[in-house]
Image 1 (cartoon, rainbow, N blue to C red):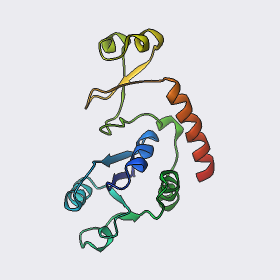
Image 2: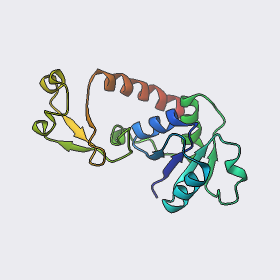
Image 3: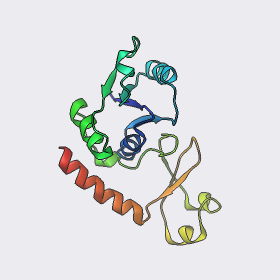
Length: 156
């Protein structure tokens, strides 16, 4: 079974790290609790929360209370509490904006969507079919991969 998550608005950085690692993670700034619960139930998502009210709500069935305020410690909590399998091949497969699954695309198709320098220096691009955001493996990805490697060694 693939786990899907929804993060409350106190967990934006955690949501970003989960998406980077390839986990299906819904996040919306200023999402009211009733809407968060509705989405969680409708889409069978586990609620990740730091909101003390969520566990007290009668309909809140499937949630994980996050203790830490540090995003990387939060990630460690989620991975350990839910015994998540970390799969490096799934890293960078989700859109950080809308959570869509990224798809490879031809370089020509993104010519008008990226800076000329990026187009000239990069060969491989992926695009989100939902929001149309284009991604490529710039130097920031190398730094993120290194950080992910450090994180996963600490977690496991």
